[in-house]
Image 1: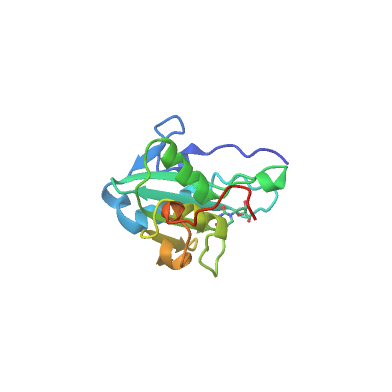
Image 2 (image 1 turned 60 degrees about the vertical axis):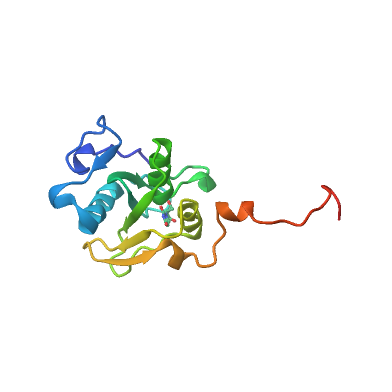
Length: 170
Ligand code: THU
């Protein structure tokens, strides 16, 4: 199994050496552009084990887009989903306020649905932002993090009132 070559020309004409985010403008603006960008990101998927390509593009509140693809590993449980890569890229560059994420796969008859772990990962950065689950033809279903993970547990819950107890009691 060989490591696939990167194809930077597929990412909106940006070279891989360019900055890690894309600023959407003109024709690329809006939902369609975000989905197109997630479809492009899917081309970089490293998935020699599952052969299941996933791409993601997360849009920050100030209009920056960070992409991700799934990255698998010979030690299978170390694989990382596309959504988590995209979000982690954004967070690692100082962006935590998200407006939407688009997800793409090769499934022709189904809209790609994010795994449970990715839903919780999105939830860390708020429940009220949009998720676009697409098909390769660009059609999509719009939902929210809250709808995908109702009654969720988030960072705020750690601050809620707790019973007083002596550590190591019980
Ligand atoms: N995958 C994602 O990247 N995102 C999802 O939400 C669903 C699953 C990846 C993980 C693994 O590399 C492959 O798809 C098959 O599960």
